[in-house]
Length: 91
Image (cartoon, rainbow, N blue to C red):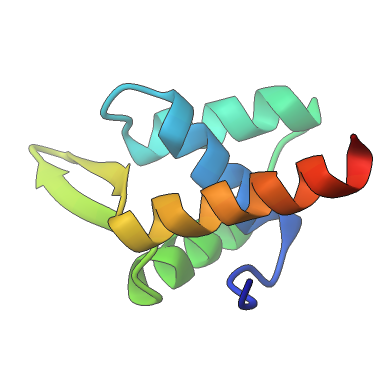
């Protein structure tokens, strides 16, 4: 497995995107904050989202005043690899 995430926040954003139906950035942020039980600084969150888009792990599509996100095939593949790696070590 190649290195694909530089932070747990990026990993958790990908997990949130995978688990939500056609989410906006705001919905993803709420989901991550619910998991963390604390607020994620907007600048930190936007930087992580932009990095995931720039690296090809998330697609971003404008939808009116919102942007919607989806995992790319590369993002899904890396997320699956992450879960397999974790499962092999925890099981």
